[in-house]
Length: 417
Image 1 (tube, rainbow, N blue to C red):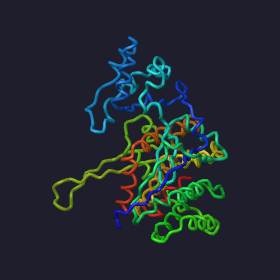
Image 2: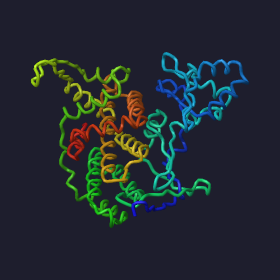
Image 3: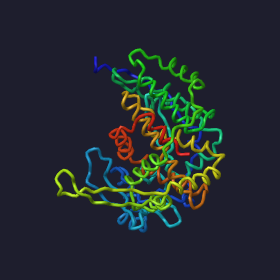
Image 4: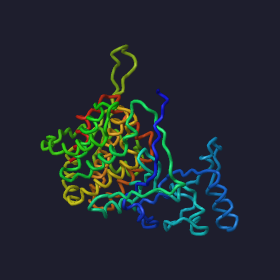
């Protein structure tokens, strides 16, 4: 019985309305992905394509010799080579005016697949072949900024060659109900009858109900309709409980796990006036080995003052953060109903991400509350989290290990304002 499978036919594509209009900003991008220290790895096919193209041009031949290195070939042939980086973290093919020399000489088709598709992402979920764009790209953020009415979705039939069947094991999961559950989550995120932080909290209330539901006898459409009808009956008028110190400390921990040395994280530490003190005290157990105690200090008043200026500057752009969270939810395939535990973990990840976005956005705009600075810090935060699944999982795992994954704790993380 445990090995029985449910076959889900995937016959359609789900595409956000801004996907097709994306274009790279190239040299106009302040955080160019080719100039940000990313190690770009690619397969043998891409490697040989570049090598063949480079043989036709002496300048490119020299660049290819200096700008690529072979890696130990893996069994799956996906990590065959990588682009070398300069001391400044720049791809060797990247010109100072923000363009790609390889593309200029040989055309886009010569680029490795990862370079051709970024920041696009597409893959099969139990609902459809889904397309999304990563908010780690300034061009994507500009599109989200230009959608005051929110993100809409287009569903199109898939060509025969792209149709699939996804097999799901029967058992304690709701993967076969992914489509209506996902649609409900997006509807909640886009429900402008309440502030975004409260929508995020209500989303947790709904997913907690789903955790406690009878999954063996579950009607997803009836359940989703009931949740939509009950939005107005939930007592959400009261203020979300806040604990500014806990909110700030949690996000400082996330910042610590990313890096204390990079320029953008240093900006955030400096803006918040983070100070660290290390104290050695006697170990009471044996009196010999010292115990190290790390104390972190910061200026809560600075955050409060900066928050006031931030809110004034972006008071008419809450829709941007709504679009940002919808885009992030699509990128991480939220929610994950493969088990009751993974369902809640996916919610904890989304809350942590939202909290961190707000944290770096406010403090990153301390010097000047401009759209350019806002985009810069969201791009950096996205690249450090969305594009590092192990790190994103680590954030949620730490909260679970310290019994800080409850809805009450999520409410504290959501109360950034």
